Structure formats: C-alpha cells, structure tokens
Length: 164
Image (cartoon, rainbow, N blue to C red; front, side, top):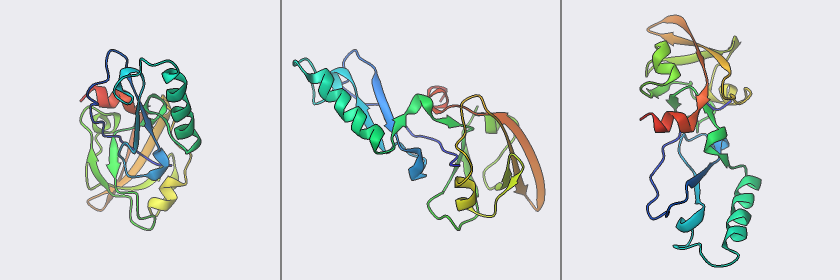
C-alpha cells in the first residue's frame, strides 16, 4: 500500500471547464506525475471538432498506463519517501488538518504497522492493499522509542488538496 499525498500545481489557461488531474499512485513519490486538462486547456483551445474525442483518447491512454483520477485516490495525509523499498517507512511530513494530523501523527514517526500488519520497510508497507476513501485505518508508529497507535479514516486526496 502506498500512503500517498499529491501536490497539485494550478494549471493556468484552462478556460471555464474543470481540470482533470490524473496521477499514478504506484510511482510512490507523493507527487502528481501526470496531469490532463479537459476543455479549453488542452493544446490552448479545444473548440475544434473532434477535440473531445482526442481528449478522451489521451485520458484513456493515461488510465491504461496506471493513472487514476485524483478524486479516486485515498489518503490519510502522511508523506514519506517511498522510492527505496528497503528503507524504514519514516514519515517526513503530516499535512495540516489531515486525518493523520488530527489523530496526532508527526513527522519522524516510523510506521511499524498498518491495520495490525507489521512492516519492516517501505516495500512491505507498499505491498499492503491500497487505501479506499472512507476506510478506517490504524497506524502503529515508533516515536522516541515507544509504539503509539493512531486511528483515522482515509479521505479523498483531492479533498485534502482543497483544504490547504
């Protein structure tokens, strides 16, 4: 399971249509790795005939490559470097007003279990099932030599981005 948080850059020039953000949560770097703008933001103007189908084709290609809509990504608000599968799962940042922050998690906490399943490294944490929005989550962390457990519900990553 990848605990993941996404950083979103505002796309300029997207006209009046909403921006659709596509991300690949399996990359594990906690950043938006792909964005796609529907409507007027695609190639400047999407007023030409056939532009909608071209946009949908690009979205379909992103989905086939493992990207999903940001609205479907669940998060608890913790950030960690998950590129090195053998590294300890150390929390580098807890987003303010996130479920993790409200539960009391802190940066420098080391995740030792999720939902009662012990993990030794980032790879084991990433191998757990991906969180779903609304899922009850329990993290056990090591903080200053003592284990502490925190319970929370995963929320939409988009919701957390909008609450900044």
